[in-house]
Image 1: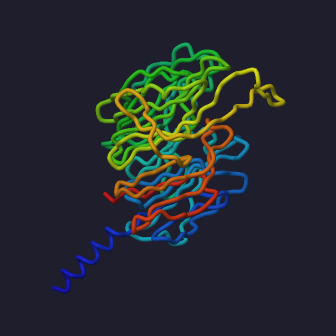
Image 2: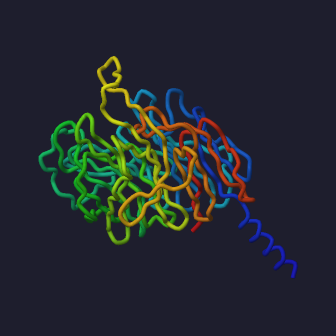
Image 3: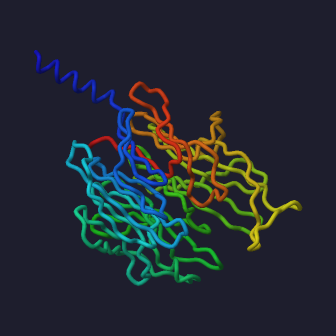
Length: 375
């Protein structure tokens, strides 16, 4: 009887425990558990963390940091024994100047960042350190009429998909000053690419794609440049099981509208925060380099319907949000950066604790993410 009671108490304590939440400030990467924070590693001087990613079993944590002047990026990874805390973790580090996204395919850390158009590939990072390894991707068409060699034949990692696959975008066309996104693909464990759907636009946004709680859907930021006075960004919703891709109509707007962040709730409902900008006008101001200075309006939250985004009643200026499968919410709130499309926002991280109360975790947070449920 005592064994059964102890087991029941353990299950109840586990169910009521707050999931681990990793986050990065200007100087360190930290872990928040049950109301207390622990520093895992320092952020190198001159860098800021762009993205945080967990392995599916919660044993590995990785982050992608970018030099503040945009001249280089680094990938970091720490590991622990399964079910154990991070105890003075050893941090593995790799240079990856052209990486835009990292993701775990189960327990394998991968990234994009390879720029050779004759040999499309991704990168794989050994959990115990050592040189990164190439993951060749086969079955892609040859780039067609690419204007810029920077983008020709380039793969951009969007995230992990079910069945151990990866979802990527492939830059196979383009003209003028902007790359063209030709198609979305899923890459199998064996490295074979399967086309999901053609997707044409000026390019993908700099923000990292958001994944649904079961990894069955992705919310992919993208932008459209029509002229110097008419441009916007939006979200493509990718069903990773069926291959369906939806591009919802933007909310009614007067001028330009930029996507600040996007996320899913525990039921897979997609949301996004947008910020308005009136576009060109007689009262425009310009910087010393000739660029027009945007006149940003309010940040508002919208819910995805079948055909368009519908405004919610949420009034706080949400810069980013991550909803755990258990329903726990972590949000970055504050004022968006001046360059909304730059992918960098710093704000106050607010999360739900074990009692489902919202508490302030930290200020000056750049990136964050819940540990996924153990498989």
